[in-house]
Length: 184
Image 1 (tube, rainbow, N blue to C red):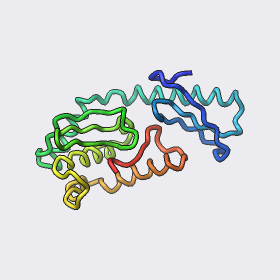
Image 2 (image 1 turned 135 degrees about the vertical axis):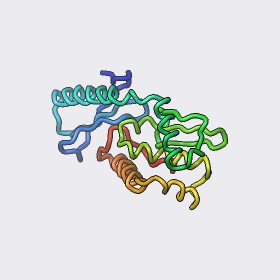
Image 3 (image 1 turned 135 degrees about the horizontal axis):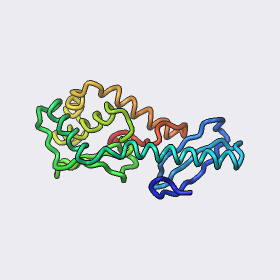
Image 4 (image 1 turned 30 degrees about the vertical axis):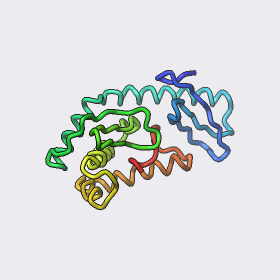
């Protein structure tokens, strides 16, 4: 079986897992995690169900284009940086597996992990503000964090991303598209 974007579907059985079945994207594959006690028939049913769920999710979030992302960044720049944060481009990236976003201040490019497409809007906005702040401050200096602090939901969004990262590292689920923190 292949995933909605032609990915391989891998099944990972876990003796620690009791009931929960999850699906994640890892290194270009879909990984369905199931309890080791599940029968082959149950496995086949769950794999089909989870792949269909991922396909529905992909269809639901695929509408967020690069142009919409760039417009969102422009609005956030207006709201939090008086319009002074002007990236040369803001695009979705399917290559970011260890970061939520990245910024190259030298050329003004911002890339946002496409794993954020299905996360709450405040979380996406936080990552955009984080990367926009890098256009003013290259590192994670106190001045940088003061800029990021202009976003009113920064603490909550960071907590959300930390929770997703923790869940992934522990292998306990989390969201279907999860990873490490912004650019730490």
